[in-house]
Image 1 (cartoon, rainbow over the protein chains, first blue to last red):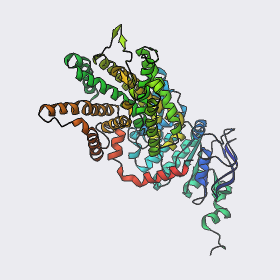
Image 2 (image 1 turned 60 degrees about the horizontal axis):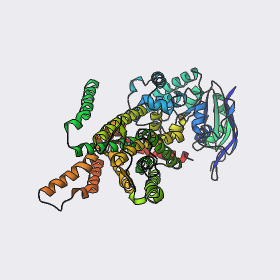
Image 3 (image 1 turned 90 degrees about the horizontal axis):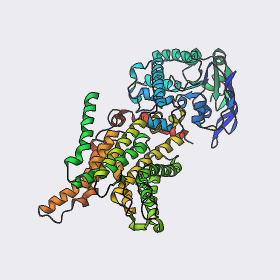
Image 4 (image 1 turned 180 degrees about the horizontal axis):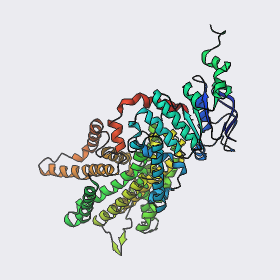
Length: 256
Length: 351
């Protein structure tokens, strides 16, 4: 069953059509990727899914219900988590607090619980702290618990963003260029991490420019160019598709 | 400092504060401390809005005014309502919080400078409103002869000592609430919004209600301070709540260390001390020494200016900063390009 389905989605900015008549579906439990040249509209698609933008046309269904027009925080509560192309951690909060803040949507403490530290609130805080520590371990950051997000090395910041996103027990995790700026070792670890995330039962959808990573980790690839889907399929098919080669390298006969 | 040393230090401080009025029979000293207590309460409340949630509020005195006028209107001869003081300590924070919601709601989409300008406007509107409704507030004359609080049948009278203990209690309550909030789901949500509002929304944080909670809870502190201060002074008038009060409370935060509860208390105490004790006392001394024309209290604003400029130059994080502010100013100035890039992305993504 499709966890996420986009049908005929369109979004433009002034005269620029960023995403046009886009349809695709993500199978629950899969790892999928979206690739395309710079400016193809990939990040716009993420922003449409998370409710930062509302599509002008088309439908977005998540987990069997429409999420079109819902506010970002409501969509996050439904089970969509993401990381950002340019890291957007809570810079001056500890790694642990970052992950605990990531669990906000799954917590129940009301304003009065927070104010009075009721027994209910205390036990919830304890459980959330424990869960956040587990996630830091999962992302290999157990030693950085008390450090400010800002002071972590770049690769750790990327992994902390993933740990923070996982804190909300998402059904779908959107990764926006998770390998950007990583060295080959870190990329290798990242592939392992993405697979382990899928094994937790989380559907993973990533934007990535690193082709070896995309081909290695994803089961299905969607190719975007000028806001339109030009090709879709298993990585080995996409790799050989003429339209994809054309989008990336230009037409052989059209070259000036 | 080890936790044990800290506890002992805190115990000694509390004990000293509790016995102070018995040791110092000079009523003017106790009076000063009681007034300083009201400002500490204000600073603790503003710290929730500015320090925790990062919402720059330049009109905080408006809520102080609302708290004070609530007491003056509901507990005096003005309309013949005589709501008991202790009940007003419950009612006034609620009234102030409601106004916090009312004034916070239109500003939700604003950030930084724009938010500051709008709150500055509210800070001007509220005292002007009280000034221009003479049928309810006696206009510029204000409302006087407020009901005096009493406890177990004993009126507070005109001694500062009962107010001193009252404010000590209210501050203890304020510290407890602020510290609880800081380590909670709500407190983390405030800080997340302060650090990155867009990312906060992706964590499922409802930025609308979370910011409103900051405005409301912050305002409720000044409701408490307003009731205590009005009862103690036995008078409210619009000129007590001018823009300079908002600036004074904000300066207390800047001086002490925004976001840090201890810092905020130290900052407000130091500024109150300079303002209400040091300057008048040195003026008296100067007069006694044969310089009748010197009045140091006239240099108050120059002194604030000097303090603020000096702090910004040498210790921008405040006297006792929160860990986050100290790091912000000293550890991580190297990656500014990244910060700019983030800002661009934010502006691109904000609707």
